[in-house]
Each structure stands twice: as C-alpha cells, then as structure tokens.
Length: 184
Image (cartoon, rainbow, N blue to C red):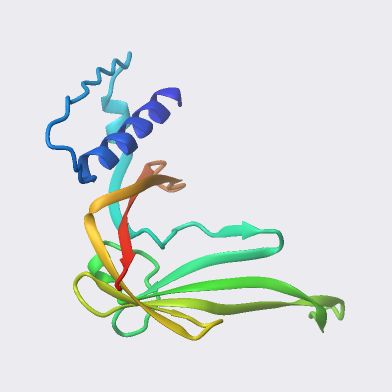
C-alpha cells in the first residue's frame, strides 16, 4: 500500500510540474530517483490511471461546511448530467449546489415520523461560451462574470482512487486544475 501511495504522490507532483507554465527563463531541472522493491508489473496490471483537466473553480468531491454540503454537477450541450466525464470538452455547463436540512420545516416519511426537510438549490452556474471562456452567474447576487481559462497554467492537482468490486482493479483519476481569471 505504501508503494502505491508513493507512486501516486510522485505522479501528482510530476503532473503538476509538467503542465505548469514556468515564467523563469532557465531553471535547473531536479532529478528524482525512485526505487521500489518488488515488481512494478503488479501496480500497472491492476490499476488504471486517468488524467482529467478542469477549471480551478471545480471540485469533483463535495465539500462540507457544518451541516451544509456544496457539490458540482457537470452537464453536456443537451443539459444532461454527465455522470462520467471522458474529457473537458464534453462539459457545457457546471452548476454548484448547496444542500442542507431545514430545521424549521418538516415532513412525514412513509412510517409517519417527522423529519427535517432537505433543501438543495443552485448557488452558482458556469456556462462555457467559447473555447477558453466561461460566464459565471451568482444566483445570490444575480451578477454575471466573464472568466478566461489558461489551460497551460496548472494551479493544483489531486487524485481519487476507486476499487471496482467486480474486477478488483483500481481506477486512479488524477485531477489537474488550471488557472481561471476574471476578464476585466
């Protein structure tokens, strides 16, 4: 397990450095030597690695703040939810949702017990309007913001490992997030 974690950390670090744009003219390249005892074949035969690029405002995981959950959903050009994203160009819209339970309003479930009402609403939406442009709509303030993306400037990376219970193979998805700036 330590071997896999070491390899994933190495992959994340190298992908962020590889795709990040460097403003310095000449920089000494750091050389890393990694020695793993045991066969690497076992890692690569039962692990699939997928690399995805997203704008820096996106997160594939939901965030939790107290009892509120924030999550993103991606849509294609037909307004259908994309459950699996193969590449960034598929995405036409991204919505950010806020979900919580309302302590004031209740409902009765099938057993007749009172439960707090779950509430979910879109708080922000990002629409792709060009090859490298997005329009952000903040529903709380009703303000529109034009954003420009810089795909060659990676600002952070993270990964997600999922084990397929049927095949017992691991799917490692490495997410790299590129810079997005407000257009003035």
